[in-house]
Image (cartoon, rainbow, N blue to C red; front, side):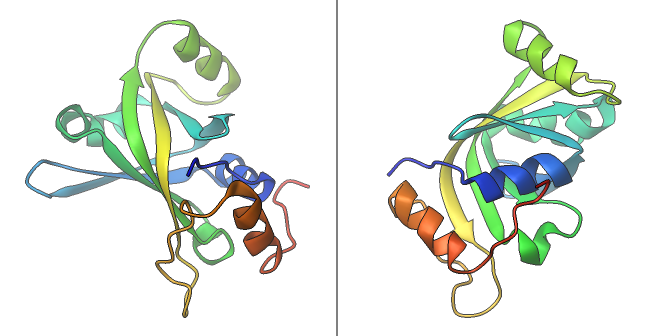
Length: 154
């Protein structure tokens, strides 16, 4: 199934920024924060990253493109999702310029683009770890609306 981020997911991602986790081929995790995130396609998130932010994960990412994403700030419970996909780092070009232009207040050194392939629920309780990307997009939207009514930024 294809991942299609809901309006609520987009709101949390774009309003709160994200923690980004990568791992070396040996399995050593590295985590950084990106304060600017933008949903650029229904299944893609782009991050404007400063030198220190991308520097934490770039070496591992160059050998293992898989990225796990969690919403930052208070989003751990209210935005109870983990997104996973393959990432690539850009330092020039049209996509880089577009994201850099949107990321006011960020000294953008690189743009990380993550094409999402997996979506999990991290809500505590019986639903923790439930894989949502195996559901049709309409079913994910209905599942989410049955649990939460808030949409960040609205």
